[in-house]
Structure formats: C-alpha cells, structure tokens
Length: 212
Image: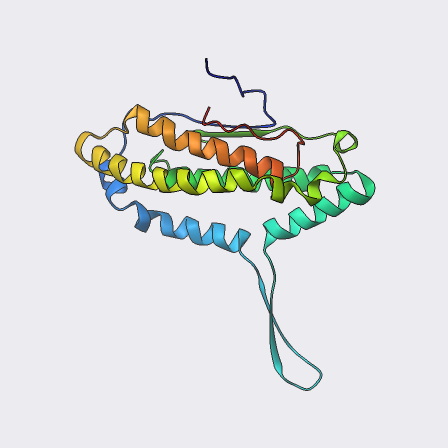
C-alpha cells in the first residue's frame, strides 16, 4: 500500500502534456539559456566591487538570495519565533519560478517559463505558525537531512538518464512516456519536500522517503 503524503507542508505537481514540440525539444538547452541566465542572476551570489582606503580594488562575493534568506529566517525563528510573511512569499514565488525553469529544461513542458503564471507547474507550501516550530531544530535540520541528500544524489542521476531517454522518445513520438514523466516529477517532489524542511524551514515534520 502506498502512503498518502499529499498533506505534507510542500506539494509539487506538474501537468502531463499530451504532445510536445519536437523542434524546441531538440534545441531545449539553447532555448532555455536566456531564462537560465535570469534565474542565475536572481539566485546566484552577488559580487560587490569597491575601493578600499589604500586605493586598492577589492572584490567581495555574497552567498546569494537563497542563502541569505535561509540565514535570516533561521535567526528569526531561533531568537524571536517569527517567520515574516513577505520573506515566505518571496521564497515561495522564487521556488515556483525555479521549478517552471526546471520543468522546461527537463522537457516536462514545452511552454516557455513565465515569471508570473504557474502554467503547468503547481508548487504549494503551507505558511507556518512560527510559534509552533521548534526554535532549535533549524540549527540541525541540514544535518538531519543528510540521508535525503544521499538518496537524492542517486535519484537525480537516475532522473538525468531518464530525461535523456525521454528526449529521444519525444523526438520520435512527440510524447513524454507517462512512467518516465512520473518518475522525474517524483524526484522533484522528493527534493521539494527536503527543501521545505531543511532550507525554507516551514515545517518540523521530517520529509518522507517517497516519490509520491
């Protein structure tokens, strides 16, 4: 019997397309490059250039929006047990945009990623009551999630191989085989629950080891 994990704090579903465009599938890495650059600008570490008191040029790199939000949220939960709503909303919308780009790159859709509309990718995360969260747990969630990281390394490699097979199938038939599609989405669903637990810090419920 398969357990129902639909009530977990983070939920990801992607609509299975009936037909996919062969041309855009063939050239997907090229078509995806502009939106990947946009996503990289949003999430990558920023670089600050300035001149010090001795007149020397200095370069300083930041950890990126994701790392900054994680650190700030951890501190707010730890010291004040508050999770600012606008921080959550921003992180969720950034996650949704990231998954639209990911779904396009992984051939799960041929609709070019929107910066606003959900399109065929549906990511929902429950906003937490920070007073109900264990204020100390965020300090060790990254450690507790190590078994998931190890499992996801294997699963991501498998998903990459499946995507190659799916690419060939789409070029030949114009369709993404449903079994392969469900596996790749399942890996994404697993990773999303780990993200919500260890990075977004919205729940203390340990993520299930499941693709469903």
